[in-house]
Image 1 (cartoon, rainbow, N blue to C red):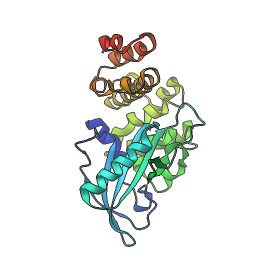
Image 2 (cartoon, rainbow, N blue to C red; image 1 turned 135 degrees about the horizontal axis):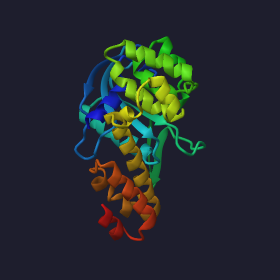
Image 3 (cartoon, rainbow, N blue to C red; image 1 turned 90 degrees about the horizontal axis):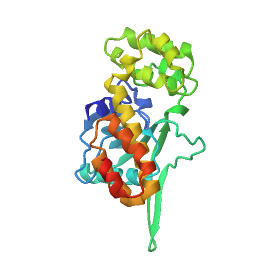
Length: 272
């Protein structure tokens, strides 16, 4: 879980108050809280106790997703309610999506809403899509936490822009460890050979990086989850807690392929 924690903190480390993701003026982050609720597995959130002159003390719940998932509105509702109940403070939920979905026309909702037997439930939350964030924000502030994400920010997929971000990271001893993260996201928008030329090191360094392994694992888990839901429905999703414990990328790749070829869940369980 350590690598996930470091990814999560990228978006809070060095962030000025007005860029904290809440759009609430004069907000001050007081404390990062433990947001692991015993009822739900939590691996991609950070809960911050904050304060502002206008609203007083409250919580900012940041949910960080590599790619948006359709189940996120329901999860945002559950996480916000659990945080508010546990700490007895109003909660401002923020969903942060890192990579654009493969379906460019997907519309990401900003609320959960349901009705059952005449009763209605609703949870609003703010959505931040990093590909819609102007890359100049990372350089003008500067916002160090955004620098590794420069390649996927709006207008950030340029060789000169990525080189600028790289120079800033390498000049700071506390940030230069994030060079591999920058390279990883650059590989989404540029040819690998060009990324290697920009970084001036063998791309094998990237592939051996814990960052690369962790994010690639999350990508495969996301694809497996989607495949299970499409082919086997909720019954298939019950295998995800077991599959999520697998760290070996080749095993996950085999499971990912197996979903396409097996006919029953029993056959898939044999692969797992």
